[in-house]
Image 1 (cartoon, rainbow, N blue to C red):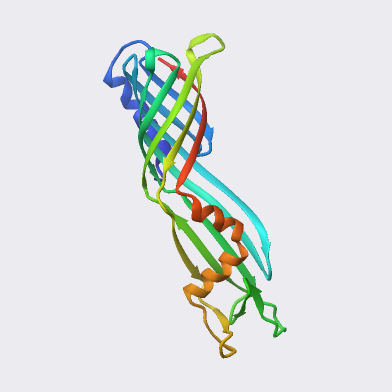
Image 2 (cartoon, one colour; image 1 turned 90 degrees about the vertical axis):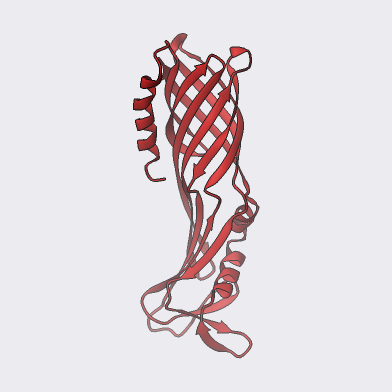
Length: 239
């Protein structure tokens, strides 16, 4: 998915070889909830268009979780293969197709070791001990289906009164499926087992419990996210 924009550029180069009808082709740059990217399209008929849309998304934020610093990140590469139907050959269109996605949500809690002090750190109600190094990380990663059905609607019209230039708005849904969570730590981390008071190597279950409790808002979104809203605004040219 790292070559999203390259695929779109290559597609733009190949499309002119498919036909020569005036203004059958379009190319645009777009931005929205899927990130920033570009798309190329070809009108098979005045009411049917094939479209290749690519976008790259990246967003991150930082928070403080108990005795740790937390960082949340949403990122992804998206390539959509779409068919647009223009009822009555007007400005509105209906879209359907497949979105090929590498979308992920990550969270990371970094626990710092305090040299010279025996106090341990608590994250999500679990007491941890960093046994070596300056810090240890607890990480969680959500991922979704790589192939996602897409349905949507759109509108496009001439820009500045010029038929060769246009703006468009796409509104739709990617059906992502249920997310899959994986957790890990940097390895040099122990937790205190409350049943016997002994520090033991941190397990995935313990790590997940900690970050879920601290990052409850993050996980509430990630756990329920099976449909992703798409809103993309574009400016482009027809030729």
